[in-house]
Amino acid sequence: MTTAPSGSTDPARIALIGTHGFGASHLRNLARLEKEGVARLVGVVDVTEPPAELQAIHHRSLGELLDAVSAGDRPEIVIIATPIDTHVPLATEALAAGLDVYLEKPPVPALEELQQLEDAARAAGCSVQVGFQARGGAGVDLLADEVANGALGQVDTVQVYGAWQRDRAYYRRSAWAGRRRLNGRRVADGVATNPLAHSVHAGLVIAGIHEVSDIRSVTTELRRAHDIEADDTTFLRIDPVGDGPAVVCALTTAAPTQSPPWIEAVGTSGTHRLFYTDDVSRRTQSAAAGAAVKLTHQRLDLLENLIAHVRDRSVGLLSSLESTGAFSAVLEAIQSAPDPAPIPAEAVDWQGEGDAAHPVVEDIEETLRRSLAEGRPFSELGVSWADEEAVQVWTPPAP
Image (cartoon, helix red, strand yellow):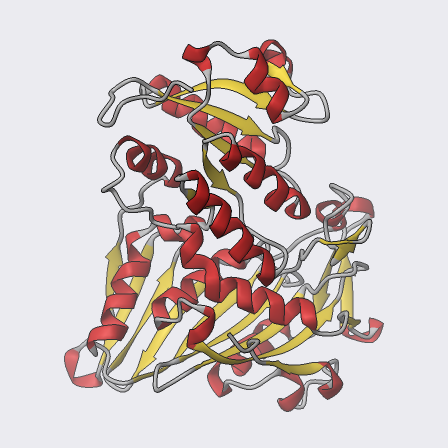
């Protein structure tokens, strides 16, 4: 196997598995990196036909690609942008071939598979970067530092707010979308584990909750307005072991409009709210300190970070597989709960026609904000469409 020497300035050789869906975003990013001389796309893998311009480098499997390419075109890094239930087998295959991996989120559909994948990476001497894009923004680390060093006083909660809008087409785009299971395998799709997974993961990082062992319990209330199997309107409360802040999340894809999601550290001496998709934040100290201060934050591309790491292993990964333990535990809590019950029809206003139609849950934005402010599930707020039977408490398995 030929690999580039440490410190090589040659473009990193990249293969992409999955060219449709979010894979299209990777193709656009790779085109940018090719122009900059940072990366070179040497092959794509897809079970369906890729865009016409990729036919010459298209293969039906990673093994087929590796057999077909010359030593000079053998990939160093494989990007995996495929259905969630295929992540572990594809990543394991890539690692066994000695390739570093960029794996879309969530990395695994079950907590037990996280250790399996970590073991495979360790045995191969390779690394896995997970596509939690919020970790590319420096704002997450800034808030995490402020929570850890007491800059905001005592922080009791880190709040995560996400009010997005998804139409019927979004959940009809593939066989696995909106599913908890498919063909006997766990898929683990849902608002907190897929579209707004970035915010949940970043909230855990900011609160200093990194490992499964950092979690005392996870409280969930899962509901759905869409005609799907998974949750689209969700309350989460992650309580830590020890005295650190809890992470409280209120999320939906059934909002009247789509607004930037945010994560806020709430302390006795101030608050700091990060709009991670925009890389801006607003810090408010005590009343005596004056008005809120707006900050902007730099962003690093996660693939570029992985390339730098592959070239020089002393460069740390921004979103390593090992850093996703706590998130994978939250995913396990969600998947261990009963299937989400539908929100009553009288509390849902469907707007638009056909595949463009989208649901709006009654008073959803106010409900999300109240849930965060009080740190309580929807059903404890007197919300008409909530159901206390949907509230579940999960605790991590004994080590």
